[in-house]
Image (cartoon, rainbow, N blue to C red):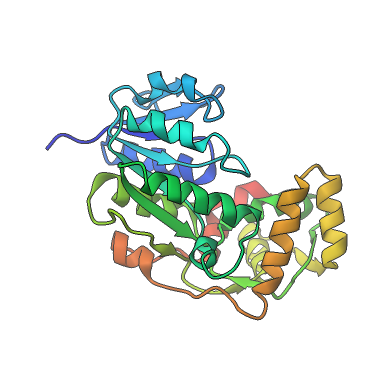
Length: 283
């Protein structure tokens, strides 16, 4: 059977990059959508394009069967046009959504949940084959602590006891690969989690263990953290959404499931394993 040709958007990001590597290793024809220079194996085709400019996507979509869609904006503005262009070429979209969308019908969502829910709605109404992957938190987001770990060994952040089932990007990519190349997840919205709840304080301890050097978590207040993030240039709407949403998880942590193993056949990687895999980023 002829392998489908896959277009990966967000190809230079954590999940997209892991997916490109796994598709390439599996012998699946893969094309990476990039806005600038990017390093991939010679047999991985790269095509310039920008999701903010739907007219730039035709060359990238030519001959493509399925698209892995990572939406890089904080609103759904322009998404309808992008999905229309995808529908002119491909037959399937696998969208990287959010576990928070599952609750959007019950109560008003914050900024991130809102745009993910709208993207899901647009894709489902498009006539394309679709899958909406709904991950919890990504282990890769802790790379934001790398400078502090390298320079001071102290991570200053709120919510030391916030425990989340963080996902290794390789596991997220493996689930996406199944959704793109088989029919097992058609019209599905699987919630994808890591294998265990790990507090932020414990995450820093595991990073320290992986790099063989002391590091510790120093808790600061939520208001101080939000002010620092805004001063550092993070979009205010993102900051105002993320920190309060995380604080709610102190009392009601995200559930842990075995969807990674059910879908891929392999157990989800632990945060300890992620820290070992990324030790070089923190040294």
